[in-house]
Image (cartoon, rainbow, N blue to C red; front, side, top):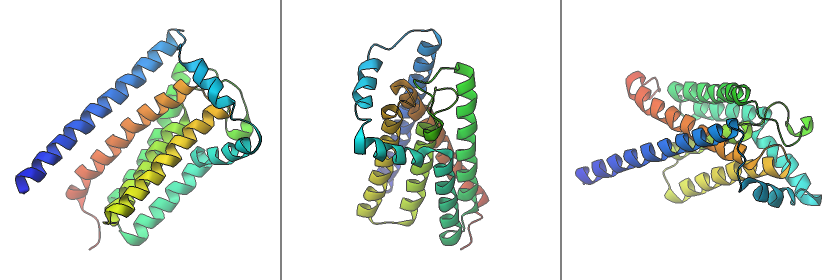
Length: 222
């Protein structure tokens, strides 16, 4: 049984590494393509399809939903997660990782935005659509914040069914937040995809750092 668990853990590590490398390469390809001035043939049809949803009740829905990925929304969710970890786990390593990971991802997003300097489809301060477009900050911040929430919640909750529901909820929030940015013309689809890819890389680094530092520092109170 021990050998089987070790083999499973090894395969999981290899799989995660491969997916992370693919995500980073995808991000780099998209960034290089945009910098070269080449347009994606698939982007405009996707953009037009989702922008057609920006009417009536759907417009209202996505206008509110997109706030889950805004700096205010992410800030509140990060504070809630940190407060929950403090109250229930006293895991200081986790608190530090969450705070640093979310903050660093936000700064990385700003850095890349200024590096690429891609104009947005439309400027609209009411939906946080200001400044440069690539990559989507909502996509980057939502994937790292809500995935970290799911990760630490499922570490404390052992029931498989509840774990699956938590990850499903995180997945839905992340995906619909990204879609909202295209629907509202705040981003191009490639901005969102690149944001997911780079945010995923940040997420994996954060989790790996936690797994490395927790056994070493082990500041959690028993």
